[in-house]
Amino acid sequence: MDQSRSFIFESGFPGFPGLRKFRLEYDSTLAPLEWLISVEDPDVSFVVVNPMIFKPDYAPRVTEEHGKSIGIRKGVSKADDLRLLVIVTLRENYEESTANLAAPLMFNLNEYKAVQVMLDDGIYSNNEPIFAEGTVC
Image (cartoon, rainbow, N blue to C red):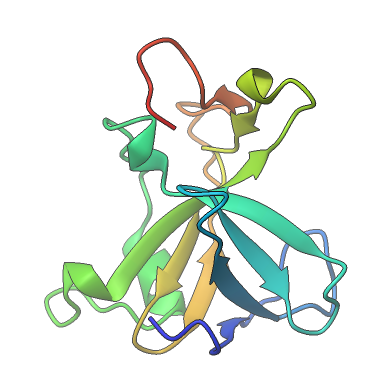
């Protein structure tokens, strides 16, 4: 993945009207955490992580429509075309940090499109501990 490329949130980024272009930045000092930074307003950034690192059974129910919104087509796109991340809230006591599993971010790595999916099934929390006993994050 080209870190200099921006992902487009075509419908905008929820809660930040007018911000549509974001880039992912890997910082080895934060690994496995990464940055999602607004291109239009660099003061707006989020810490993100692959949820499978601390919640290996994470399986959000995203619809085919969610995939279509970023150019992922069932039967055509490969699993490698899609990347799923979640936003992390870092706490002063880092062991209390949480992730928003109820609103994952989906990235099409080929077309550089992205969307935040708001799950409404109540299965996942928006404050899931990432340093729970037995996790490796």
